[in-house]
Amino acid sequence: MKAESHAQSPSGAIDLEAYMHGLGRDARAAAHALARADADAKNRALCAMAMEIRGRATDLLAANRADLEQAKKEGRDGAFLERLALTPASIEQMAEGLEDIAALADPIGAITGLARRPTGIEVGRMRVPLGVIGIIYESRPNVTADAAGLCLKAGNACILRGGAEALHSNQAIAACVRAGLKAAGLPEAAVQVVATTDRAAVGHLVTMHQYVDIIVPRGGKELIQRLMRESKIPMIKHLDGVCHLYVDDRADLEMAVRLADNAKTQRYGTCNTMETLLVAAGIAARVLPLIAAIYKNKNVEMRGDEATCILVNDAKPATEQDYYTEWLAPVVSIRVVQGLDEAIAHIAKYGSQHTDAIVTDDQARAARFLREVDSSSVIVNASTRFADGYEYGLGAEIGISTDKLHARGPVGLEGLTTQKYVVLGHGEVRT
Image 1 (cartoon, one colour):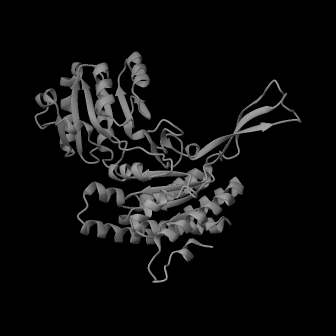
Image 2: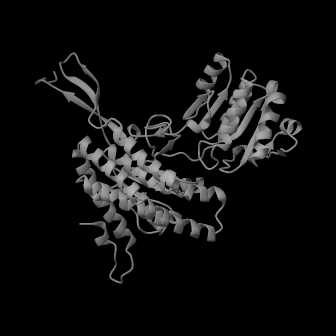
Image 3: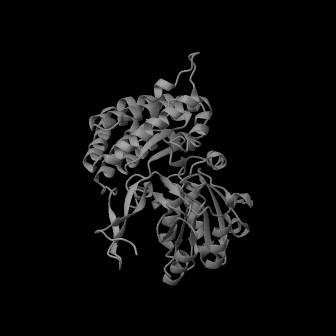
């Protein structure tokens, strides 16, 4: 029975609890079917989804325009609109992302570490799906395709709850996903997008532990804090992305300028954008004015400590709170530090264990930074913007995890699976 049949109360209004539990039951049944699906069937579905997305690009753009117009009426800021917007290029990227996932090796069923024990039994671990994944996200409609593709390839059913601001976009993408599943002979309930904008739907989703195995929140800090309070289901999450780039006094000057520019300005509204620039005092007078000139030219507001304000006339005095802030906007916090020890201490105090980078030619300092900075991605001599699934070779990602159990860093296919022990015997009995 389809979930929609549970959605109406006798009065004709939606019975939200029945509707959400219907989605859960259908997802659980679909998860059992997906566990039997082979890689060819899943790959056919992914490629069919990509074809549908390309073929319906005009419809996707029209649906997205409706969402953007509403967001503008509500006075949403530029960073929000950037996250919400679809373009012909981003639609093509969605399609290519699904094809990239299809090209990845299917992790399901792989047995690793098989070893014979003295008793004669062979013990190993098999990779298996998590089951049903609930994904709650805001703004970015491309998440609908990315999440559907990754969950499907990893053998999971998913229930997707996008933000009300992207309702038209998400439903249009969901239609492409359903068509792709149908074309491959897989259950359409393998990917379900919650059709109501009622925020109470989230409360039901994160407490349906009888149907949902994992919750993946993708959104602002307020959303994730709410889910941390309410969820009765384990989560794969990060709270925010206060990312740092530390320019060591043994850094290549040209490289430092290039990386500080890219890490901050390549895109403002992403969780791996650098929000705080740390510069060693020994190189600050040489490098900060060069970086500041680029930021000024790109209208990036600079907030710095006293040493920064002396070197950069356009910098405003930073507050303590500024260093805790994930700007997601053309604003950057800057601090001059005495060296590596102070940089690592600053990151430990103000960071969010997301992504932090060092620019240095000193291998020993780079090694210390890698060992001592406790973040899900730690980078030497490259932009923080590389911290995502595509750039790490994972295909599309479901999100970033700063937790230390199960998955950490960009979460791709492997992060959406778990392992179980398998034992191969030959009639052995325990004595």
